Image (cartoon, rainbow over all chains, first blue to last red; front, side, top):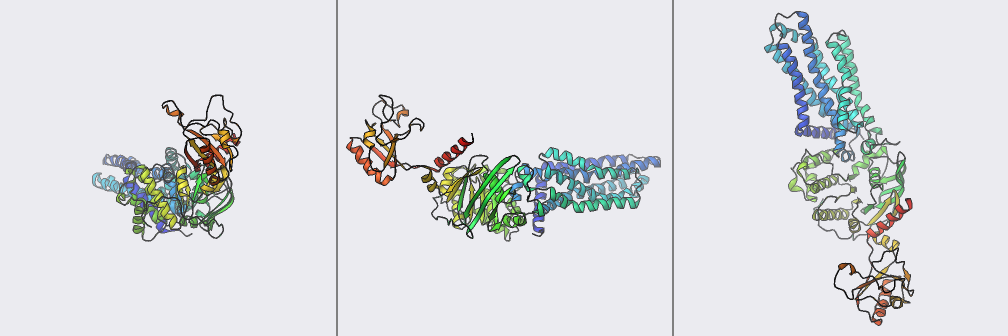
Length: 254
Length: 369
Protein backbone atom coordinates (compact mmCIF):
# COMPACT_ATOMS: atom_id res chain seq x y z
CA UNK A 1 0.00 0.00 0.00
CA UNK A 2 1.35 3.43 -0.92
CA UNK A 3 2.02 6.13 1.60
CA UNK A 4 -1.01 8.28 2.33
CA UNK A 5 -0.74 12.02 2.92
CA UNK A 6 -4.20 11.88 4.51
CA UNK A 7 -3.07 9.44 7.18
CA UNK A 8 0.15 11.37 7.86
CA UNK A 9 -1.91 14.55 8.05
CA UNK A 10 -4.34 12.88 10.47
CA UNK A 11 -1.50 12.02 12.84
CA UNK A 12 -0.05 15.55 12.60
CA UNK A 13 -3.43 17.12 13.24
CA UNK A 14 -4.14 14.88 16.20
CA UNK A 15 -0.71 15.46 17.73
CA UNK A 16 -0.94 19.24 17.44
CA UNK A 17 -4.41 19.19 19.02
CA UNK A 18 -3.05 17.16 21.91
CA UNK A 19 -0.03 19.45 22.34
CA UNK A 20 -2.31 22.46 22.64
CA UNK A 21 -4.29 20.85 25.43
CA UNK A 22 -1.47 19.20 27.34
CA UNK A 23 -0.14 21.46 30.08
CA UNK A 24 3.04 19.39 30.49
CA UNK A 25 3.92 19.78 26.83
CA UNK A 26 3.07 23.47 26.79
CA UNK A 27 5.27 24.09 29.83
CA UNK A 28 8.13 22.02 28.37
CA UNK A 29 7.87 23.78 25.04
CA UNK A 30 7.85 27.30 26.52
CA UNK A 31 9.81 27.29 29.78
CA UNK A 32 12.98 25.65 28.42
CA UNK A 33 13.27 27.99 25.39
CA UNK A 34 12.70 31.00 27.61
CA UNK A 35 15.49 29.87 29.94
CA UNK A 36 17.80 29.33 26.98
CA UNK A 37 16.88 32.83 25.75
CA UNK A 38 17.25 34.75 29.00
CA UNK A 39 20.73 33.53 29.88
CA UNK A 40 22.55 34.52 26.66
CA UNK A 41 20.54 37.72 26.32
CA UNK A 42 21.56 38.87 29.79
CA UNK A 43 25.15 37.90 29.03
CA UNK A 44 25.23 39.99 25.84
CA UNK A 45 23.47 42.99 27.36
CA UNK A 46 25.93 43.00 30.25
CA UNK A 47 28.97 43.33 28.01
CA UNK A 48 30.49 46.79 28.21
CA UNK A 49 31.97 48.72 25.32
CA UNK A 50 35.38 48.56 26.96
CA UNK A 51 35.46 44.75 27.05
CA UNK A 52 38.47 43.20 25.37
CA UNK A 53 37.77 41.72 21.94
CA UNK A 54 38.87 38.19 22.94
CA UNK A 55 36.46 38.23 25.88
CA UNK A 56 33.73 39.67 23.66
CA UNK A 57 34.21 36.95 21.06
CA UNK A 58 34.11 34.19 23.71
CA UNK A 59 30.89 35.55 25.22
CA UNK A 60 29.25 35.89 21.82
CA UNK A 61 30.27 32.31 20.96
CA UNK A 62 28.73 31.02 24.17
CA UNK A 63 25.60 33.11 23.76
CA UNK A 64 24.98 31.94 20.23
CA UNK A 65 25.46 28.33 21.24
CA UNK A 66 22.87 28.25 24.01
CA UNK A 67 19.81 28.75 21.74
CA UNK A 68 20.94 25.63 19.88
CA UNK A 69 19.85 23.65 22.93
CA UNK A 70 16.21 24.50 22.17
CA UNK A 71 15.89 22.31 19.03
CA UNK A 72 17.55 19.46 20.91
CA UNK A 73 15.87 19.33 24.28
CA UNK A 74 12.31 20.27 23.34
CA UNK A 75 11.84 17.65 20.58
CA UNK A 76 13.78 15.04 22.56
CA UNK A 77 11.25 15.26 25.38
CA UNK A 78 8.25 15.26 23.05
CA UNK A 79 9.41 12.43 20.81
CA UNK A 80 10.44 10.30 23.79
CA UNK A 81 6.81 10.37 24.90
CA UNK A 82 5.32 9.93 21.42
CA UNK A 83 5.08 6.13 21.23
CA UNK A 84 5.52 4.87 24.77
CA UNK A 85 3.10 7.53 26.00
CA UNK A 86 0.39 6.28 23.65
CA UNK A 87 1.14 2.77 24.74
CA UNK A 88 0.79 3.70 28.41
CA UNK A 89 -2.54 5.45 27.91
CA UNK A 90 -3.91 2.57 25.84
CA UNK A 91 -4.40 4.51 22.63
CA UNK A 92 -1.71 2.78 20.59
CA UNK A 93 -3.51 -0.53 20.03
CA UNK A 94 -6.62 0.99 18.40
CA UNK A 95 -4.38 3.04 16.09
CA UNK A 96 -2.41 -0.04 15.10
CA UNK A 97 -5.62 -1.82 14.10
CA UNK A 98 -6.12 0.75 11.33
CA UNK A 99 -4.40 0.72 7.93
CA UNK A 100 -1.84 3.33 9.03
CA UNK A 101 1.69 2.08 8.36
CA UNK A 102 4.64 2.46 10.68
CA UNK A 103 6.28 4.98 8.34
CA UNK A 104 3.11 7.07 8.08
CA UNK A 105 2.58 7.03 11.81
CA UNK A 106 6.19 7.99 12.56
CA UNK A 107 6.34 10.68 9.86
CA UNK A 108 3.18 12.22 11.27
CA UNK A 109 4.57 12.16 14.78
CA UNK A 110 7.94 13.55 13.69
CA UNK A 111 6.41 16.38 11.65
CA UNK A 112 4.09 17.36 14.46
CA UNK A 113 7.04 17.64 16.85
CA UNK A 114 9.36 19.24 14.29
CA UNK A 115 7.08 22.17 13.49
CA UNK A 116 6.65 23.66 16.98
CA UNK A 117 10.20 22.76 18.08
CA UNK A 118 11.88 24.44 15.12
CA UNK A 119 9.35 27.27 15.14
CA UNK A 120 10.02 28.05 18.79
CA UNK A 121 13.80 27.76 18.27
CA UNK A 122 13.75 30.22 15.36
CA UNK A 123 11.46 32.53 17.29
CA UNK A 124 13.74 32.55 20.31
CA UNK A 125 16.77 33.11 18.11
CA UNK A 126 15.00 36.03 16.42
CA UNK A 127 14.00 37.51 19.75
CA UNK A 128 17.59 37.13 21.01
CA UNK A 129 19.06 38.88 17.98
CA UNK A 130 16.42 41.62 18.10
CA UNK A 131 16.99 42.34 21.79
CA UNK A 132 20.75 42.39 21.39
CA UNK A 133 20.50 44.77 18.43
CA UNK A 134 18.32 47.12 20.42
CA UNK A 135 19.84 46.83 23.90
CA UNK A 136 23.50 45.94 23.51
CA UNK A 137 26.25 48.45 23.02
CA UNK A 138 26.88 49.02 19.28
CA UNK A 139 30.15 47.09 19.10
CA UNK A 140 28.59 44.08 20.78
CA UNK A 141 25.46 44.26 18.60
CA UNK A 142 27.64 44.31 15.50
CA UNK A 143 29.67 41.37 16.78
CA UNK A 144 26.51 39.32 17.30
CA UNK A 145 25.10 40.22 13.89
CA UNK A 146 28.30 39.31 12.07
CA UNK A 147 29.17 36.18 14.01
CA UNK A 148 29.54 33.17 11.65
CA UNK A 149 27.56 31.11 14.16
CA UNK A 150 24.41 33.06 13.32
CA UNK A 151 23.79 31.68 9.79
CA UNK A 152 25.17 28.31 10.94
CA UNK A 153 22.59 28.20 13.70
CA UNK A 154 19.80 28.81 11.19
CA UNK A 155 20.95 25.74 9.27
CA UNK A 156 21.65 23.55 12.29
CA UNK A 157 18.41 24.21 14.19
CA UNK A 158 16.25 22.00 11.93
CA UNK A 159 19.02 19.41 11.51
CA UNK A 160 19.58 19.05 15.23
CA UNK A 161 15.83 18.91 15.81
CA UNK A 162 15.54 16.13 13.21
CA UNK A 163 18.22 14.09 14.92
CA UNK A 164 16.66 14.56 18.35
CA UNK A 165 13.21 13.60 17.04
CA UNK A 166 14.25 10.39 15.31
CA UNK A 167 16.46 9.26 18.16
CA UNK A 168 13.63 10.00 20.58
CA UNK A 169 11.09 8.11 18.48
CA UNK A 170 13.39 5.11 18.17
CA UNK A 171 13.89 4.96 21.92
CA UNK A 172 10.20 5.56 22.54
CA UNK A 173 9.31 2.66 20.24
CA UNK A 174 11.38 0.31 22.37
CA UNK A 175 10.98 1.76 25.85
CA UNK A 176 8.45 0.49 28.35
CA UNK A 177 8.46 3.56 30.59
CA UNK A 178 8.05 7.21 29.63
CA UNK A 179 10.56 8.55 32.16
CA UNK A 180 13.30 6.16 31.04
CA UNK A 181 12.53 7.01 27.44
CA UNK A 182 12.84 10.76 28.10
CA UNK A 183 16.13 10.40 29.96
CA UNK A 184 17.66 8.19 27.28
CA UNK A 185 16.40 10.42 24.48
CA UNK A 186 17.90 13.51 26.04
CA UNK A 187 21.24 11.77 26.40
CA UNK A 188 21.11 10.39 22.87
CA UNK A 189 20.41 13.86 21.47
CA UNK A 190 23.67 15.24 22.78
CA UNK A 191 26.34 13.86 20.38
CA UNK A 192 25.58 16.20 17.44
CA UNK A 193 25.15 19.04 19.90
CA UNK A 194 28.60 18.27 21.24
CA UNK A 195 30.01 18.62 17.74
CA UNK A 196 28.17 21.91 17.34
CA UNK A 197 29.66 23.02 20.65
CA UNK A 198 33.15 22.19 19.41
CA UNK A 199 32.48 24.43 16.40
CA UNK A 200 31.05 27.22 18.53
CA UNK A 201 33.99 27.27 20.89
CA UNK A 202 36.51 26.99 18.05
CA UNK A 203 37.84 23.63 19.25
CA UNK A 204 37.22 22.45 15.71
CA UNK A 205 38.01 25.13 13.20
CA UNK A 206 34.61 26.18 11.89
CA UNK A 207 35.49 26.38 8.21
CA UNK A 208 32.63 26.42 5.76
CA UNK A 209 33.62 23.02 4.34
CA UNK A 210 33.66 21.31 7.74
CA UNK A 211 30.36 22.86 8.76
CA UNK A 212 28.80 21.94 5.40
CA UNK A 213 30.02 18.34 5.70
CA UNK A 214 28.61 18.08 9.20
CA UNK A 215 25.30 19.56 8.10
CA UNK A 216 25.18 17.26 5.07
CA UNK A 217 25.81 14.23 7.27
CA UNK A 218 23.01 15.23 9.61
CA UNK A 219 20.69 15.83 6.66
CA UNK A 220 21.31 12.34 5.27
CA UNK A 221 20.80 10.77 8.69
CA UNK A 222 17.57 12.71 9.25
CA UNK A 223 16.30 11.72 5.81
CA UNK A 224 16.93 8.02 6.24
CA UNK A 225 16.08 7.85 9.93
CA UNK A 226 12.36 7.48 9.28
CA UNK A 227 12.84 4.11 7.60
CA UNK A 228 15.37 2.98 10.17
CA UNK A 229 13.04 3.85 13.05
CA UNK A 230 10.17 2.13 11.23
CA UNK A 231 12.24 -1.06 11.44
CA UNK A 232 12.33 -0.89 15.22
CA UNK A 233 8.64 0.06 15.38
CA UNK A 234 7.23 -3.40 15.83
CA UNK A 235 3.52 -3.82 16.44
CA UNK A 236 3.93 -7.09 18.30
CA UNK A 237 6.60 -5.80 20.64
CA UNK A 238 4.63 -2.62 21.26
CA UNK A 239 1.45 -4.48 22.12
CA UNK A 240 2.69 -7.53 23.95
CA UNK A 241 6.03 -6.28 25.25
CA UNK A 242 7.69 -9.43 24.00
CA UNK A 243 10.26 -10.02 21.34
CA UNK A 244 8.50 -10.61 18.04
CA UNK A 245 8.53 -13.92 16.25
CA UNK A 246 9.50 -14.32 12.63
CA UNK A 247 6.99 -12.97 10.13
CA UNK A 248 6.19 -10.07 12.39
CA UNK A 249 4.16 -7.15 11.00
CA UNK A 250 7.05 -4.69 11.20
CA UNK A 251 8.23 -5.83 7.79
CA UNK A 252 7.22 -3.83 4.73
CA UNK A 253 6.11 -0.97 6.90
CA UNK A 254 2.90 -2.84 7.68
CA UNK B 1 -25.84 2.64 9.83
CA UNK B 2 -29.04 2.67 11.79
CA UNK B 3 -29.80 3.58 15.34
CA UNK B 4 -29.95 1.06 18.13
CA UNK B 5 -33.14 -0.92 17.85
CA UNK B 6 -33.18 -2.00 21.45
CA UNK B 7 -33.74 -5.58 20.45
CA UNK B 8 -31.58 -8.05 22.24
CA UNK B 9 -33.52 -11.25 21.86
CA UNK B 10 -32.00 -14.58 20.97
CA UNK B 11 -30.64 -14.89 17.50
CA UNK B 12 -33.43 -15.75 15.12
CA UNK B 13 -31.37 -16.31 12.03
CA UNK B 14 -29.18 -19.37 12.22
CA UNK B 15 -25.88 -18.73 10.52
CA UNK B 16 -24.70 -20.61 7.53
CA UNK B 17 -22.00 -22.72 9.02
CA UNK B 18 -20.55 -23.63 5.67
CA UNK B 19 -16.87 -22.94 5.52
CA UNK B 20 -15.10 -21.87 2.37
CA UNK B 21 -16.28 -19.00 0.22
CA UNK B 22 -19.02 -17.93 2.63
CA UNK B 23 -16.72 -17.85 5.63
CA UNK B 24 -15.77 -14.50 7.15
CA UNK B 25 -12.99 -16.04 9.20
CA UNK B 26 -11.21 -19.33 8.61
CA UNK B 27 -8.61 -20.34 11.14
CA UNK B 28 -6.40 -23.36 10.63
CA UNK B 29 -4.04 -24.74 13.28
CA UNK B 30 -3.25 -21.27 14.59
CA UNK B 31 -0.54 -21.32 17.27
CA UNK B 32 1.22 -18.56 19.16
CA UNK B 33 4.19 -19.09 21.41
CA UNK B 34 5.72 -16.37 23.60
CA UNK B 35 9.11 -17.62 24.70
CA UNK B 36 8.52 -20.74 26.78
CA UNK B 37 4.77 -20.13 27.03
CA UNK B 38 2.21 -21.33 24.51
CA UNK B 39 -0.62 -18.79 24.46
CA UNK B 40 -2.68 -20.38 21.69
CA UNK B 41 -2.25 -24.00 20.65
CA UNK B 42 -3.40 -25.41 17.34
CA UNK B 43 -6.74 -23.63 17.13
CA UNK B 44 -8.97 -24.17 14.10
CA UNK B 45 -12.47 -22.88 13.46
CA UNK B 46 -14.62 -21.16 10.89
CA UNK B 47 -16.95 -18.20 11.34
CA UNK B 48 -19.67 -17.69 8.75
CA UNK B 49 -20.46 -14.31 7.27
CA UNK B 50 -23.05 -12.47 9.34
CA UNK B 51 -22.56 -14.72 12.33
CA UNK B 52 -22.21 -13.54 15.91
CA UNK B 53 -19.47 -15.76 17.20
CA UNK B 54 -18.77 -15.91 20.91
CA UNK B 55 -15.24 -16.56 22.09
CA UNK B 56 -15.15 -17.64 25.71
CA UNK B 57 -12.49 -18.72 28.12
CA UNK B 58 -10.88 -17.87 31.45
CA UNK B 59 -8.29 -15.14 31.89
CA UNK B 60 -5.09 -16.07 30.06
CA UNK B 61 -6.86 -18.57 27.84
CA UNK B 62 -5.52 -16.96 24.66
CA UNK B 63 -8.68 -15.14 23.53
CA UNK B 64 -7.10 -11.72 23.15
CA UNK B 65 -4.00 -13.23 21.56
CA UNK B 66 -6.22 -14.94 19.00
CA UNK B 67 -8.03 -11.68 18.27
CA UNK B 68 -4.71 -9.86 17.91
CA UNK B 69 -3.45 -12.48 15.49
CA UNK B 70 -6.61 -12.28 13.40
CA UNK B 71 -6.45 -8.48 13.57
CA UNK B 72 -2.88 -8.50 12.18
CA UNK B 73 -1.43 -6.98 15.32
CA UNK B 74 0.78 -9.94 16.12
CA UNK B 75 2.03 -12.70 13.87
CA UNK B 76 1.16 -16.34 14.50
CA UNK B 77 4.00 -18.71 15.29
CA UNK B 78 2.40 -21.26 12.99
CA UNK B 79 -0.90 -21.95 11.30
CA UNK B 80 -2.87 -19.84 8.90
CA UNK B 81 -6.06 -17.83 8.68
CA UNK B 82 -8.26 -15.99 6.24
CA UNK B 83 -10.00 -12.86 7.55
CA UNK B 84 -12.62 -11.04 5.49
CA UNK B 85 -11.57 -13.15 2.53
CA UNK B 86 -7.92 -12.10 2.78
CA UNK B 87 -5.06 -14.38 3.81
CA UNK B 88 -3.37 -13.40 7.02
CA UNK B 89 0.22 -12.23 6.62
CA UNK B 90 2.43 -9.14 6.49
CA UNK B 91 1.93 -8.63 2.76
CA UNK B 92 -1.81 -7.99 3.08
CA UNK B 93 -2.07 -6.82 6.66
CA UNK B 94 -3.09 -3.26 5.78
CA UNK B 95 -5.75 -4.60 3.42
CA UNK B 96 -7.23 -6.73 6.20
CA UNK B 97 -7.22 -3.76 8.58
CA UNK B 98 -9.22 -1.76 6.06
CA UNK B 99 -12.04 -4.33 6.20
CA UNK B 100 -12.16 -5.10 9.90
CA UNK B 101 -12.37 -3.21 13.13
CA UNK B 102 -11.24 -4.15 16.57
CA UNK B 103 -12.50 -2.81 19.85
CA UNK B 104 -9.97 -3.66 22.54
CA UNK B 105 -11.12 -4.10 26.12
CA UNK B 106 -9.81 -0.65 27.08
CA UNK B 107 -11.55 2.11 25.09
CA UNK B 108 -8.21 3.65 24.06
CA UNK B 109 -9.50 7.15 23.38
CA UNK B 110 -7.44 10.33 23.44
CA UNK B 111 -8.63 11.95 26.62
CA UNK B 112 -7.67 15.49 25.61
CA UNK B 113 -9.67 15.29 22.39
CA UNK B 114 -13.41 15.49 22.04
CA UNK B 115 -15.43 12.47 20.99
CA UNK B 116 -15.78 13.90 17.49
CA UNK B 117 -12.06 14.68 17.24
CA UNK B 118 -11.26 11.11 18.26
CA UNK B 119 -13.57 9.69 15.62
CA UNK B 120 -12.35 12.15 13.00
CA UNK B 121 -8.77 11.03 13.59
CA UNK B 122 -9.69 7.40 12.99
CA UNK B 123 -11.90 8.26 10.01
CA UNK B 124 -8.87 9.93 8.42
CA UNK B 125 -6.65 6.94 9.20
CA UNK B 126 -9.15 4.79 7.31
CA UNK B 127 -9.19 7.37 4.52
CA UNK B 128 -12.98 7.58 4.64
CA UNK B 129 -15.01 9.93 2.46
CA UNK B 130 -17.96 11.84 3.97
CA UNK B 131 -16.33 11.79 7.37
CA UNK B 132 -18.78 14.12 9.10
CA UNK B 133 -21.75 12.03 8.02
CA UNK B 134 -20.13 8.78 9.07
CA UNK B 135 -19.17 10.18 12.45
CA UNK B 136 -22.70 11.45 13.00
CA UNK B 137 -24.14 8.06 12.07
CA UNK B 138 -21.73 6.19 14.31
CA UNK B 139 -22.51 8.45 17.24
CA UNK B 140 -26.24 8.08 16.65
CA UNK B 141 -25.87 4.31 16.52
CA UNK B 142 -24.42 4.22 20.02
CA UNK B 143 -26.64 7.01 21.37
CA UNK B 144 -23.83 9.49 21.89
CA UNK B 145 -24.81 12.32 19.55
CA UNK B 146 -25.46 14.76 22.38
CA UNK B 147 -21.94 14.26 23.80
CA UNK B 148 -20.14 14.61 20.47
CA UNK B 149 -18.20 17.71 21.51
CA UNK B 150 -17.33 16.65 25.05
CA UNK B 151 -13.74 15.85 25.92
CA UNK B 152 -13.52 12.09 26.37
CA UNK B 153 -11.75 12.70 29.69
CA UNK B 154 -15.08 14.07 30.95
CA UNK B 155 -17.08 11.01 29.95
CA UNK B 156 -17.98 8.17 32.28
CA UNK B 157 -16.43 4.77 31.66
CA UNK B 158 -19.62 3.55 30.06
CA UNK B 159 -19.82 6.51 27.70
CA UNK B 160 -16.18 6.07 26.73
CA UNK B 161 -16.96 2.45 25.95
CA UNK B 162 -19.76 3.62 23.69
CA UNK B 163 -17.47 6.11 21.97
CA UNK B 164 -14.99 3.28 21.35
CA UNK B 165 -17.79 1.23 19.88
CA UNK B 166 -18.70 4.15 17.61
CA UNK B 167 -15.10 4.17 16.44
CA UNK B 168 -15.36 0.54 15.34
CA UNK B 169 -18.40 1.37 13.22
CA UNK B 170 -16.72 4.13 11.23
CA UNK B 171 -15.18 2.07 8.45
CA UNK B 172 -18.30 -0.05 7.96
CA UNK B 173 -16.32 -3.25 8.62
CA UNK B 174 -17.30 -6.65 7.35
CA UNK B 175 -15.79 -8.27 10.43
CA UNK B 176 -15.82 -6.73 13.90
CA UNK B 177 -13.79 -7.99 16.83
CA UNK B 178 -15.33 -6.85 20.09
CA UNK B 179 -13.39 -7.55 23.27
CA UNK B 180 -15.72 -7.27 26.26
CA UNK B 181 -17.89 -4.56 24.65
CA UNK B 182 -20.22 -4.25 27.63
CA UNK B 183 -17.52 -4.21 30.28
CA UNK B 184 -18.27 -1.40 32.70
CA UNK B 185 -21.62 -0.55 31.18
CA UNK B 186 -24.78 -0.22 33.24
CA UNK B 187 -27.61 -2.63 32.36
CA UNK B 188 -29.42 -0.13 30.15
CA UNK B 189 -26.29 0.74 28.19
CA UNK B 190 -25.37 -2.94 27.92
CA UNK B 191 -28.86 -3.64 26.62
CA UNK B 192 -28.39 -0.95 23.98
CA UNK B 193 -25.07 -2.46 22.93
CA UNK B 194 -26.75 -5.84 22.63
CA UNK B 195 -29.35 -4.20 20.44
CA UNK B 196 -26.63 -2.65 18.31
CA UNK B 197 -24.93 -6.02 17.89
CA UNK B 198 -28.26 -7.47 16.80
CA UNK B 199 -28.69 -4.65 14.28
CA UNK B 200 -25.20 -5.19 12.90
CA UNK B 201 -25.83 -8.91 12.56
CA UNK B 202 -29.01 -8.19 10.65
CA UNK B 203 -26.93 -6.03 8.28
CA UNK B 204 -24.60 -8.95 7.61
CA UNK B 205 -21.66 -7.84 9.73
CA UNK B 206 -19.71 -10.72 11.22
CA UNK B 207 -19.10 -10.18 14.90
CA UNK B 208 -16.39 -11.94 16.84
CA UNK B 209 -17.37 -11.36 20.45
CA UNK B 210 -14.98 -12.01 23.30
CA UNK B 211 -16.80 -11.91 26.58
CA UNK B 212 -16.79 -13.16 30.14
CA UNK B 213 -20.53 -12.59 30.39
CA UNK B 214 -21.98 -15.97 29.60
CA UNK B 215 -25.55 -14.72 29.67
CA UNK B 216 -24.52 -12.21 27.01
CA UNK B 217 -22.94 -14.92 24.89
CA UNK B 218 -25.97 -17.17 25.29
CA UNK B 219 -28.32 -14.38 24.31
CA UNK B 220 -26.36 -12.90 21.41
CA UNK B 221 -24.22 -15.57 19.85
CA UNK B 222 -25.17 -17.91 17.06
CA UNK B 223 -22.28 -20.13 18.05
CA UNK B 224 -19.69 -20.05 20.78
CA UNK B 225 -16.20 -21.43 21.12
CA UNK B 226 -14.75 -22.17 24.53
CA UNK B 227 -11.00 -22.21 24.74
CA UNK B 228 -8.30 -22.59 27.30
CA UNK B 229 -5.10 -22.25 25.24
CA UNK B 230 -6.53 -24.84 22.88
CA UNK B 231 -10.08 -25.01 21.62
CA UNK B 232 -12.24 -27.05 24.00
CA UNK B 233 -15.50 -27.02 22.13
CA UNK B 234 -17.46 -25.11 19.55
CA UNK B 235 -21.12 -25.08 18.62
CA UNK B 236 -24.50 -23.50 19.20
CA UNK B 237 -25.20 -22.90 22.89
CA UNK B 238 -28.12 -25.36 22.90
CA UNK B 239 -26.01 -27.98 21.12
CA UNK B 240 -23.28 -27.66 23.70
CA UNK B 241 -25.74 -28.03 26.54
CA UNK B 242 -27.15 -31.19 25.02
CA UNK B 243 -23.73 -32.56 24.22
CA UNK B 244 -22.41 -32.11 27.71
CA UNK B 245 -25.35 -32.76 29.94
CA UNK B 246 -27.91 -35.56 30.21
CA UNK B 247 -31.47 -34.44 29.84
CA UNK B 248 -33.26 -34.37 33.15
CA UNK B 249 -36.53 -33.64 34.89
CA UNK B 250 -36.71 -31.58 38.06
CA UNK B 251 -39.51 -32.81 40.32
CA UNK B 252 -40.68 -30.91 43.40
CA UNK B 253 -43.19 -32.37 45.85
CA UNK B 254 -44.90 -30.70 48.80
CA UNK B 255 -43.28 -33.20 51.19
CA UNK B 256 -40.46 -35.71 50.83
CA UNK B 257 -41.44 -39.04 49.31
CA UNK B 258 -41.35 -41.93 51.76
CA UNK B 259 -39.91 -44.38 49.20
CA UNK B 260 -38.71 -42.46 46.16
CA UNK B 261 -36.82 -45.47 44.82
CA UNK B 262 -40.08 -47.36 44.51
CA UNK B 263 -41.88 -44.41 42.92
CA UNK B 264 -39.28 -43.85 40.19
CA UNK B 265 -38.38 -47.52 39.59
CA UNK B 266 -39.05 -48.85 36.15
CA UNK B 267 -40.72 -45.75 34.80
CA UNK B 268 -40.39 -45.46 31.02
CA UNK B 269 -37.55 -43.15 30.00
CA UNK B 270 -36.21 -42.67 33.53
CA UNK B 271 -32.60 -43.79 33.77
CA UNK B 272 -31.64 -42.69 37.28
CA UNK B 273 -32.59 -40.24 39.99
CA UNK B 274 -31.09 -38.29 42.81
CA UNK B 275 -32.24 -35.82 45.36
CA UNK B 276 -31.87 -32.21 44.40
CA UNK B 277 -29.35 -29.82 45.96
CA UNK B 278 -27.10 -32.67 47.02
CA UNK B 279 -23.41 -32.29 46.26
CA UNK B 280 -22.53 -34.42 43.29
CA UNK B 281 -19.70 -36.27 45.03
CA UNK B 282 -22.04 -37.37 47.82
CA UNK B 283 -24.98 -38.31 45.69
CA UNK B 284 -23.87 -40.54 42.91
CA UNK B 285 -26.84 -40.92 40.65
CA UNK B 286 -28.73 -44.08 41.37
CA UNK B 287 -30.30 -46.20 38.71
CA UNK B 288 -34.03 -46.07 39.07
CA UNK B 289 -35.14 -48.73 41.56
CA UNK B 290 -31.94 -48.77 43.57
CA UNK B 291 -32.30 -47.58 47.16
CA UNK B 292 -30.81 -44.29 48.03
CA UNK B 293 -27.89 -44.63 50.42
CA UNK B 294 -29.05 -42.17 53.01
CA UNK B 295 -28.51 -42.15 56.78
CA UNK B 296 -31.44 -43.57 58.74
CA UNK B 297 -34.16 -41.09 59.46
CA UNK B 298 -33.01 -38.59 56.86
CA UNK B 299 -35.40 -37.86 54.09
CA UNK B 300 -34.82 -36.27 50.70
CA UNK B 301 -33.09 -32.91 50.58
CA UNK B 302 -35.41 -30.04 51.12
CA UNK B 303 -34.88 -27.05 48.91
CA UNK B 304 -36.23 -24.75 51.61
CA UNK B 305 -34.27 -26.20 54.50
CA UNK B 306 -31.91 -23.25 54.42
CA UNK B 307 -34.69 -20.75 54.78
CA UNK B 308 -34.99 -21.12 58.51
CA UNK B 309 -38.82 -21.18 58.28
CA UNK B 310 -41.19 -23.01 60.63
CA UNK B 311 -40.78 -26.76 61.12
CA UNK B 312 -43.04 -29.21 59.27
CA UNK B 313 -43.21 -30.78 55.84
CA UNK B 314 -41.26 -28.82 53.35
CA UNK B 315 -40.94 -29.21 49.59
CA UNK B 316 -38.53 -31.87 48.43
CA UNK B 317 -36.69 -31.94 45.13
CA UNK B 318 -35.59 -34.80 42.89
CA UNK B 319 -33.64 -34.78 39.67
CA UNK B 320 -34.39 -37.59 37.23
CA UNK B 321 -32.07 -38.37 34.36
CA UNK B 322 -34.28 -39.21 31.41
CA UNK B 323 -33.84 -40.21 27.82
CA UNK B 324 -36.80 -38.15 26.63
CA UNK B 325 -38.49 -35.62 28.92
CA UNK B 326 -41.69 -35.61 26.85
CA UNK B 327 -42.09 -39.37 27.35
CA UNK B 328 -40.94 -39.52 30.96
CA UNK B 329 -42.86 -36.55 32.41
CA UNK B 330 -46.41 -38.02 32.12
CA UNK B 331 -45.25 -41.36 33.53
CA UNK B 332 -43.50 -39.64 36.46
CA UNK B 333 -46.61 -37.55 37.13
CA UNK B 334 -48.83 -40.62 37.19
CA UNK B 335 -46.41 -42.49 39.47
CA UNK B 336 -46.28 -39.58 41.93
CA UNK B 337 -50.05 -39.26 42.02
CA UNK B 338 -50.38 -43.00 42.50
CA UNK B 339 -47.95 -42.79 45.43
CA UNK B 340 -50.13 -40.11 47.02
CA UNK B 341 -47.56 -37.36 46.58
CA UNK B 342 -48.62 -33.75 46.21
CA UNK B 343 -46.72 -32.48 43.20
CA UNK B 344 -45.61 -28.87 43.09
CA UNK B 345 -43.82 -28.94 39.75
CA UNK B 346 -42.30 -31.13 37.09
CA UNK B 347 -40.08 -29.43 34.56
CA UNK B 348 -37.20 -30.20 32.29
CA UNK B 349 -33.93 -28.98 33.82
CA UNK B 350 -32.28 -26.26 31.77
CA UNK B 351 -28.51 -26.15 31.83
CA UNK B 352 -27.12 -22.77 31.05
CA UNK B 353 -24.10 -21.91 28.94
CA UNK B 354 -22.44 -21.14 32.23
CA UNK B 355 -22.87 -24.80 33.25
CA UNK B 356 -21.25 -25.85 29.98
CA UNK B 357 -18.42 -23.39 30.47
CA UNK B 358 -17.73 -24.41 34.05
CA UNK B 359 -17.89 -28.09 33.19
CA UNK B 360 -15.32 -27.70 30.41
CA UNK B 361 -12.99 -25.31 32.18
CA UNK B 362 -13.07 -27.31 35.43
CA UNK B 363 -12.33 -30.42 33.43
CA UNK B 364 -9.31 -28.94 31.63
CA UNK B 365 -7.93 -27.24 34.72
CA UNK B 366 -8.37 -30.48 36.67
CA UNK B 367 -6.36 -32.31 34.04
CA UNK B 368 -3.54 -29.77 34.09
CA UNK B 369 -3.24 -29.77 37.89
